[in-house]
Image (cartoon, rainbow, N blue to C red; front, side, top):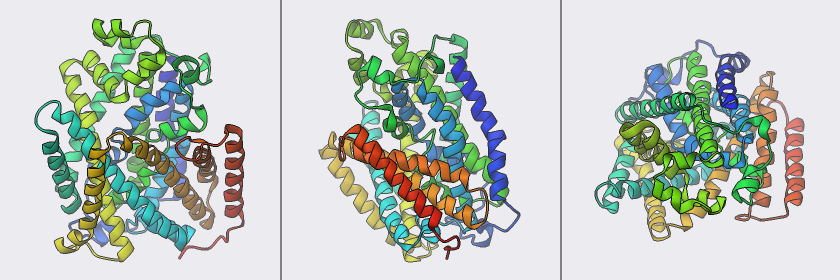
Length: 491
């Protein structure tokens, strides 16, 4: 419990102290923003700051800081360090710098910003890569919630049609009509769930693994996992520590902000809040799996079923959604079950809807098409919907196959994080500002994603030490490229 409390205080202190340092380095001012200068009633609309924060939080969170944290804690207390240090010095800096760059450049998306600072080739790559990621995320977050909802009431395909219809509305409608009204409510419910569970943790005060109990791979030692901590932990816990997906969502909010001085609360603050969500669920996971917490919250029949079985069968049975359902129902009662349902169903649906809207915005920037008319929005949205429907149909026919694809999506988010951090480093160096605050995380994330590419059995599956050597060489080359890059390259 001490590690949890220290980590919680550290995250809050990180926002108050390091967040101000990062803000001072960027230097927000009182210039007019695109929300007022380019107001179009569709994507560029001034929204209240608190509402933008709630939308940003839900957009970047979804179920990521819940499910990822639960699985990440399988590796042991080292997950505490990654959540706290990764969030304060990596993820929150990543989100703030990329969000503020978008705000200062009229709400430009990640691909356009990358092209501005890393060149045309990087822009073309990011257009294709982010489009693929957005449609994959959107398609994945249709069928999974539909399965859960059909278990409560109705037919599975009925829910598929309803969720996809909602996606169409969030993609096509002005941002203040659906997203601006619905998302803050879901964000509030998620925050209430996390606060309630945090209070329950403190009240129950269970025995928990502490950081000083050992930073080794508890997953291998106690749960029978075969993955190593590096790089698996740093890909498993993305949302809640560092996630490149956030850089694709921030431009939507950058187009709704009336002042640059809102940036620290909205971008840095939302990421710290997400880190707290991940911290709470990682702590619950540590108690659930390592100190027999599952016996407390499960029925006697389930406990009897797993007594004497291997620990590996335990984590295979209690997947992340199941843990959320059981813990919320046991600790928070009927209301907790409702909150769990919102977390498992509403959060991914809202994330999927935002992903399709982001895909439309990416295409509008790539082709230079204004989005003020319904015709222009429909023109760009139809191919996005068509690809999404095709992926959805494939997923329905191959439900197990999409799990493999999702591993590439998790890795892909961290690839985007590395690229975003390099982009921000180039910008800061051009402005003769302290670029080390993004350069060091950029180097680390480059090491993570290249090593995962080499060592993961779903990609190349090379020897562990060979993969580390190749990843180190790739990171060194990227750093040298940054060092010799001309200081003034932005267009």
